[in-house]
Length: 225
Image (tube, rainbow, N blue to C red; front, side):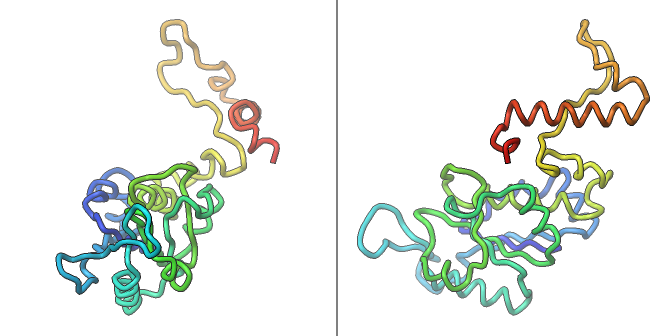
């Protein structure tokens, strides 16, 4: 799988993909992530990519021309399954969406910055818009890193134990149950006996029960749906 990320500030993503699971995915050649500088696709002085918005108002807007230049250049090398703009007014990222995107081959993520991007680019080139939550960031770079991580870890072979991703929170519309590790008894705080029983049927029943309880308590909105 290949994920290209188009950004005005590529330095913000320097460390996001060079450690842990996504680095191992790249080393295994299961996932390729390319961070691309939008300023390489403008012909204006000082590598300008933004301008004042028509009609007045605070904040600069990313211009359509460098965005289109970049996308059309990249499309000469890759056929993208989706061109995704990270924006607060996009569809909220959830596990089902991450699952779906993990089945794609090539994705292009567009990071907004400043006040946003020219609407004409959104209307004519973007195929999907995604938000990571109901709040505003300084730019789309951190959101792109979140999206790439949520997708990349689902690619078969990326995790050492592929069943791990299947038991994550939200995979079955429930939060994950509590987890414990050694020591069994720490200062009188003990691991639930059922987890030490060796009875896998009872353990799975206990985990499901706790997942239901936790979801009902912490995320009643999910539980009701």
